[in-house]
Structures are given as C-alpha cells and as structure tokens.
Length: 247
Image (cartoon, rainbow, N blue to C red):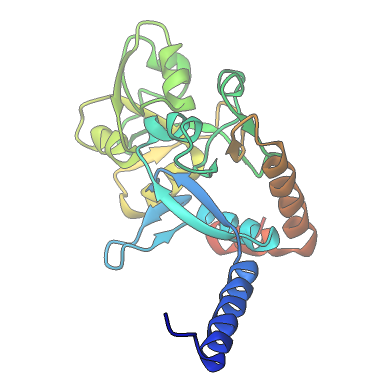
C-alpha cells in the first residue's frame, strides 16, 4: 500500500480542524412546538408559509438571548403536549395558559402574557351579554383550550369543538351557535376582518407560559433567564407594541 503524501495528510488535518471548529461554533437548536392557527400569536403567511405572530417573534428573541437557533414545529393543538412528552420538540410556545391540570403533565416558564376569555357573538345579537346568558345555549370553542373548559362549566350548554380558533368563530358568523368563547387578543384580531361579530370584556384572567418537560430543568432555567433578559432590555415591549400597540 502506497504511503499517503505529506500534502494529503496536511489537507486531511486541516479539514478535520475546520469541521471541528464549525461544529463547536454552531448554535444548539431549540425545537419549538406551536399550533400555527391562532393569530395574532402564531399563524402562517398564506403566500410564503412563513411563521408569524407575537409568540413566534418572542420565542425567536428568547432563543437569541439563550444562544440557541429556533426551529418551529407546527402541530395540531390537541397534539402539542403529547408531542412534547414524546420528545418531538423541546418546548411549546402556543398561547398556552398555565393551568393546574397542565402542570400535572408539564412545567412552565415564568408567565409572559396576561390574557382572558371573552364571549364572541354576532354584532346584531343583544341577547347574550354575560356567561349566565349562555346557559342552555350552543357555544363554539377551540378544543382543549381554556375557552373549552369555561364553556363546559356553563349549565345546560351544548359545546361545539373545533380544531382551529378561526373555525370556532366562523360558526358564530354562520349562526350555528349563539357564541364563541375564546382569548381576547384572538377575538380582537379576527374582529378586525369581520365586522359582523363583537365581543365584550374578559370574564377570566389567565397567564400564558412556555411549556417544557418537567425533567428538563436546565432548559427551564435558560428560558426564564432569557425572558428576564429581553424584558429588562426593552425588547419584549417592542415585540408587544409591534403586535398589540403600546403596552
């Protein structure tokens, strides 16, 4: 067998060094599960397919502050937590309310957004003003959300569940239900497009968090530090203003 030339050996050594340097310099990837059907928090641009929204901008800022490259994994809402638990992604960023029930399965970051549920009705409807007015009526919700939980507690109500939030509101517009219970910011965003619906003040107060597997304590700490950093720097306020106006 012929000996390898010294030039060839030198080239191989340089290739190994360059490859090793690139690997060391590469950012770790943060895989983020989201259900991109919930504007203005997360949705896809119809033309480009790009992921947009408050949550998307915020998690990218969190990733940058933590020195991580964010990769979005679009998943149906009711599959988000199962997907996290099976390791399909590292965390969930999807306007997910921190609840006692969810805390049994996953951990959450510090809260990053305060929200509330509202009642969406047809603009011409004056019969429904409060939760009590919904007793015995048909209500639409996005399945598995806190709106679903709130509707399920209303006496005698029939709850129609949809996979996507816009479909739940469309059911109100179609006259299939008396009202939809959904997050305030989502109702406000969709009402910009459809003037035949209206909504009132929130009747609940809740907080969104980034869901993480309970056994991933290092990532929980890293995300919380990154959240605190972008709040302190003013970056959070800028992202908020981009999507909702001045805080």
